[in-house]
Image 1 (cartoon, rainbow, N blue to C red):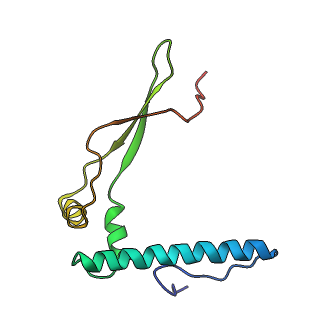
Image 2 (spheres, one colour; image 1 turned 120 degrees about the horizontal axis):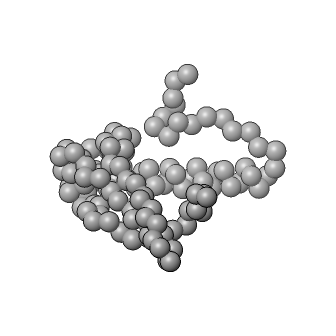
Length: 114
């Protein structure tokens, strides 16, 4: 099935009026964010294809590492991998900074270990 646009529009059927209104509102927000991103890219000389740029940004990886600590809650470190050179250039042009050192976060994941 062919996509109608970069947003991947498709019919959605709801039974209740408030669900329809919420769906329309979320679609409006998504379109507004997409168009804002398009204008932002154009102002930085990067064309007007947010879908292509977002595909490039998918290469940026992050992970959480949870370290158990005796007699204390676990320590959760949030890490972001170093992107490839071409992605670094895009980030620099958009003036987006990604963290380059671990960030300590509160552990919100339930400990499932016995």
